[in-house]
Amino acid sequence: MAESIIQVKDLSVIYNEGQSNEVRALENITTEIFPQEYVIIHGPSGCGKSTLLYTIAGLQIPTHGEVVVNGKDIAQMKNGELVEFHRSGEGIIFQAFYLISSLNIIDNVCLPQIFQGENLKKRKEKGMLLLQRFGIAEQAYKFPSQLSGGQKQRVAIARALVNNPQIILADEPVGNLGSKSAQNFLGLIKELNEIDKKTIIMVTHNGEHLYYADRVINMRDGRIVNEEVNKEKRPVEAVKLAREIIEESGNWINVTDDFKMLMKMFKGLNPQQVGALLIPFKAKQLLFHVLSELSEEQASSAENFLKELLFKNIDLATFEKNLDLPFEEGGANWNKRRSKSLALRIKSILDQVQQIGGNPDEAAVSLAEYLIKYFGLNFSEKGKLIFVSLLELRLENKTDYNGLRKILDAPPEAGGMGLYKNTAERIVREIEVIMLLKYSV
Ligand code: ADP
Image 1 (cartoon, rainbow, N blue to C red):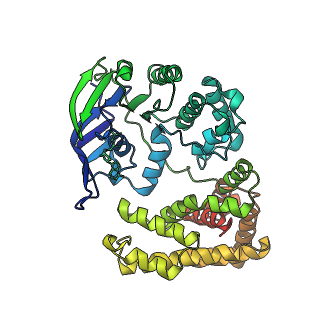
Image 2: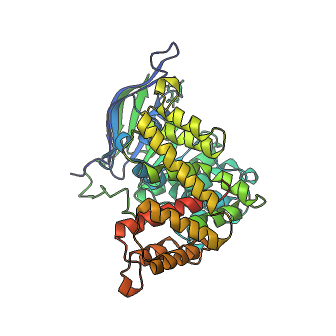
């Protein structure tokens, strides 16, 4: 018998807990979703459907209980796992489309692939195939405001699919569509389930849609009142869907290409403006790079402070102080020692970012000195010179992340620097983060 891919166990979500405006949105919800099922969550407005969906999506933190997807408790996922989960574990379609109005359609579809590591051309090809599939290829270079609601929702479905997630979540996806567009759209979702074998979880308050689903979970006042099975899909024959959400490493961002893509996407913006657009990614990347072993809440509030720091809304001293403050006082609930050590680490990276702004020779020398010191590298004089020239190649984008990593790792007799694999990996990551931050900081 196939195992379920999502287990919701005794889940409660309480908004504003302990305050006068407390809302118990979900109370002790337990259910399972099986591979390739099409499940509809149904109930009147305000009964907690969206809260349940967003908790399954990892966008809402449970107050009690847990949500396990593909064998992993979302709340326990490490930062990198969570990012990967958001990126390609589940695709989400919202009622309000959430298309970026300043991006054309193809770029909107390709957006989730940023930092996916594939080149721009391949990404666009993938995006175009999806637009063709949904009959909107002709709209590729138009902007969202030029499309009808039905067309926009097809763009949203293409975007949800672009990283090929196993699970598609949809929150009242036809709520804003006329009845004909709604029927068409629901047909497409059904096709994703039957042909593409995607697991679908859709929220609706509209009873007319229920027959599309294999199973309907009826909710009221934050609880499941019953489940109706239209088509039994639970014991799917030996479907091995507990696939790894995270592909082993090799999944690091490709700074230069992504920056170029953003420049293209956001025509009319200068590099500084595009750099600013990247700040949320920078904050995340920088944080993941320097940390591990934090609770999700500690990490996400630290990430917010880091964003503030990169936007220059706060200085380093405030950043350090905020990390240390308890949650109740609006801080990230770290301790003094840890806050200080992160602030110092960030400072040394940001200092280095300043250093590499100028001419590539000097930048490479300064970067080499920094890396030698930070990683305690033991090079001969000749080794140092080679290291500097390799860094210069990377800074000028004449080699990429992988190219540099391979040379650092390769033994000297094969023309490499003979570093341990692990050290080579950490060095190139450090460089990529510094290069990423260089744009605009
Ligand atoms: P549904 O999707 O069934 O309409 P929701 O999950 O959106 O229901 O909301 C469930 C309950 O939680 C409602 O009473 C709603 O007002 C409340 N609620 C939803 N989001 C929040 C929030 N961010 N803060 C406080 N209350 C919320």
